[in-house]
Image 1 (tube, rainbow, N blue to C red):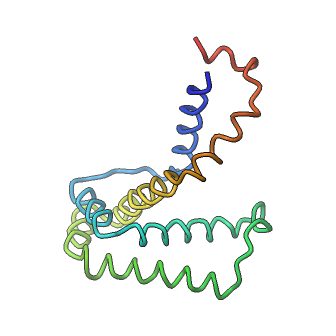
Image 2 (tube, rainbow, N blue to C red):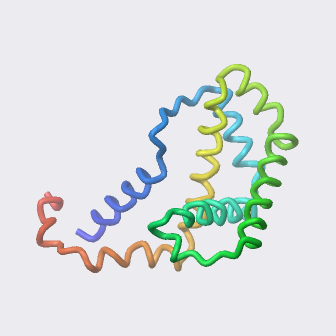
Length: 150
């Protein structure tokens, strides 16, 4: 039963990372996304996760939970700007140009969504994060969800 809850939670986590924008990946967008992923290292991906956390932390429902100074926010934003610029102007310039030419501007969203997913997966593999993710399952009233065990 607990395993099923973890599968459901994993699916919910995946759904939370999906935008309401339609995603159409073509061959050039796939190549661009592949380049973005292979051109970043763990340090870059950790900076991306920090930026995502920093941005989501601006939402009024959770802003009280995130205590970042303006200086810290600026450093995080600068790190992402540098990574973004490096990827699009150096590491993946050819793939980006082709993807934009043949698949349009939406390719930027889809390619960086892939990179964000890879970064989030690496972040979620941390043992502390893994333990924390499962904590809520200890509080689920499993009797009310017995129908899931069929």
